[in-house]
Length: 227
Image 1: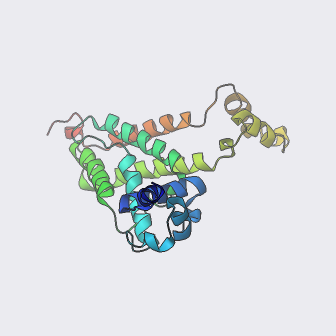
Image 2 (image 1 turned 135 degrees about the vertical axis):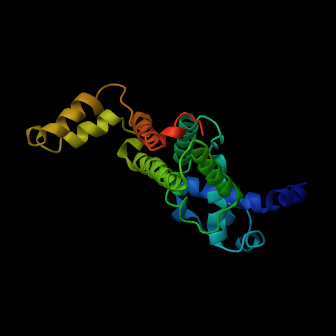
């Protein structure tokens, strides 16, 4: 029985290798992902990994595609503002689970099927809404700059530790004379340090501003969906 259990445990596939790589990255960041650490995660010898992936670049391409597969796709032809809101919100949630992926999503030059399907759906949604090809490119770049930028800020903030937002803010404001920075102090006391404040709530406000601004770029003839 023990031999059979061992065979089941060590039997690999490309999918299992990539899932293991994602687990390593989720646990220790992308810098912790090596062939050796991946082999440990999978319970196999390092050379066994190479039967399913050629090198680390292929692993990175694969796990980036897995991340894209987790993001909810917009429905082409649906109400574009709502579809892009859902897609952006989903992307933020996925990047909160996999913060290591923020810097990688737009860096890979060998996109997988989930990545291509994702891009195609976003572009199709914008085109169906009446955006020209040029405006579609502008809109996609702007939306992703906001989503990825917010995700990076959210992942980097010290409030992701054991302390609350208020505790972190109090420690920071205590380091400088309030009278020297009245505007900073005002926002800290009247907004950030108020009970119930959550940095994540800023996401919805900013996303709405971005999408509402883009809506003004759609040609008037197409703004209501008419030809």
